[in-house]
Length: 190
Image (cartoon, rainbow, N blue to C red; front, side):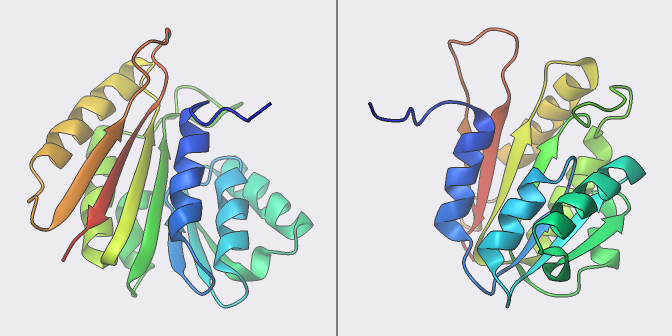
């Protein structure tokens, strides 16, 4: 029996990331959450690569640090307790990939969510430090009020990106109930 390919947004995002991230790459996990993507990225970049991980919640940073320590990967990651909108205060080099898992921390306070304004600022700044052919992957959870606002803001923002400079795609489950997350991916052409 073959494994299903279109299972959930996070699996599709991982396939995109696996196809692009290589040993020695520099990447950003803009929302570390519980650390699963950060560990995944740290493995992909290898010993010569680097991962910058951002989150505003101490619990998220602690959870991620624990997973990285248990996997002997902490030396490849710089964890930063700050908003992703401040990426430019910490990252002074070109990056190959930026991943955003937007919404709230699974298992955390659902009142603390990513917000449209700070996310758009983070996307803008990420575009500025993205290498040619680098990508940004946004996994957007929009089943809550702030998530709907964030989804609408992001879609409007990316629709206006110059098509000569960026290619933007959207993956969306159209026959599933309960607002399944969607993916927007941006590739820098120039």
